[in-house]
Length: 471
Ligand code: ASP
Ligand code: MG
Image (cartoon, rainbow, N blue to C red; front, side, top):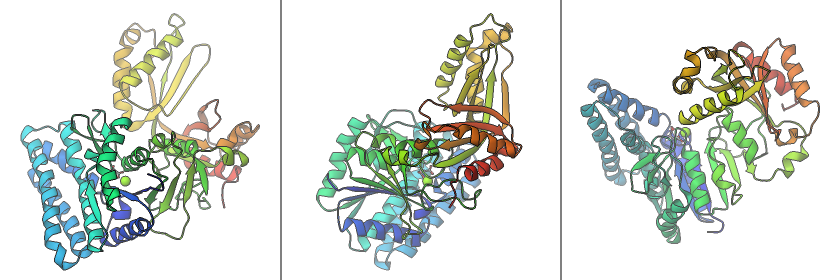
């Protein structure tokens, strides 16, 4: 469909009745001009509450589960009362009640079983998005706009990796054209749940925490939309973390590659997987602030031409909860390459993301950086796959260093800019921060730097200043 706009509202942009009104107004305004599909997250904090409830259920903790359910009802009832005209309230309260009832039945099943099957978690947790989609659609209808809440389980087809599923684009395109095109053709505004999907045989899945951005881009790609707007509570993609850097600036424009690198390296503004589905059709994305409608936001575009015009980096981002794992052969009997290959295979089986990796020296020592939350699984898989080498002393015991932080300096314009790395490292060392590891790919899109945790903030500030990123 030409000219179609897909928009996504995050949890804070739907966190209260007042915010839902704003989201509805934005959707309606565009819907008056062209086809719109609105994708929603659960209201702020609701997903956490749902997941916590399921853990309580598994642990057999009836009182805590009841307390959570009460909070869930209260939160949505309150919004419903504030949002909807009296005449519609009873019906919508009943609808909310039914959805939360569905959730509580799944939770109670888990309590009886004393376990949380992954597919049941996915089915239950998507109810946060089904609630917000329902409320937004009902409110739009109350304002005289034809709207319909759509469960993305009927739109997004995925593999069966529960909790972190990957879309199957061809089948999603088929499903989307059946469910969404029909609505759009009738002038109805579909309000689709973010975060969830289902397997080809209909089992419920989710796309990973924060996955609603990804849902929106999957839908935009499936419908061949002309634009995707992602509404959050910040002004766009920034040159640095504003909590850290007082003169951090919003960027007018970044490329897909830059935005993906920033997201991947800890910038919170976009889910890292969001841009991949859009590449093929080069659909532009806007990152916008639903709390500041007058701000233009950041445009994310496929082309690197404009980025190259600007020399040097565009932004610096950092991550604190990471761990550096080093692997070192004890002697030269073992091929370093083989050890590396086995270690990488183990990481693949553990399904973890390597944030940075470096290798050097005659001894073929190498180290890689992972999220601390994934460290348990990393060590388990590594130890299993290299157990013989460890037992026979061919490998030194793995070294794990959690007292580190990752900095990523990102920009397509860094390519072929001599002296840049030198300036960055000098700026860091002037602040007395020791650099532990460095990685730069040959695309020169990102320089990743691992430093001591205590020096992380200071190093980020130094780079932002040295590269003249501030306003
Ligand atoms: N509600 C889900 C979460 O909190 C998905 C999202 O917000 O994007 O992870
Ligand atoms: Mg969110």
